[in-house]
Length: 204
Image 1: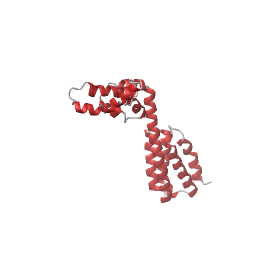
Image 2: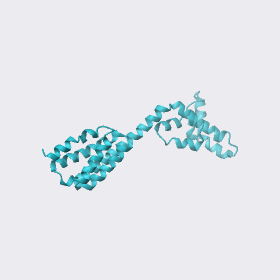
Image 3: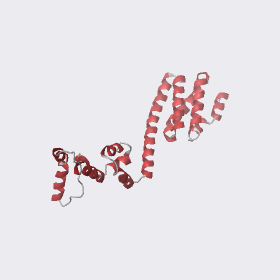
Image 4: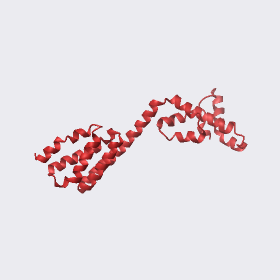
């Protein structure tokens, strides 16, 4: 084992990459080595650095910090400028896969945080204060908000507000818009249930 390889291993970059608070520093160290000396290093050391670069990208989804994401981006740029074509292609592919996983985990984490902070019944109560356009908008925020915003009670309130109390809505438009609800109502009435299962959202 060459002296340069020993010195590199003593840096402990691979181990540092597994720790969330050391990951950005390790990525920056790898980036610096790639840009500054990669082409002059022994083949066995180049292989170690290449494997550590791949490891850095594979671990990115677990980090979930802005500094980790920025450091990984910098490492990618350094790898693209220093590595030969075949290795560069492998690194880019690994980074793209890691980035997709990173975004998915980040999105799932945000949804879990929102769900933990606001129970569904609280969300439904808050959404009951919104107008129609705002209610539609909140369905796009995250999965838990979408579930709450599609609560039948909310859409019953919206239906009552738009068609039951509006003085500007024409009789023809009201009849057309409420046709589905009336059909559901008559069907449920025949079956002894007129309080639930009406598709209020679909009536718009």
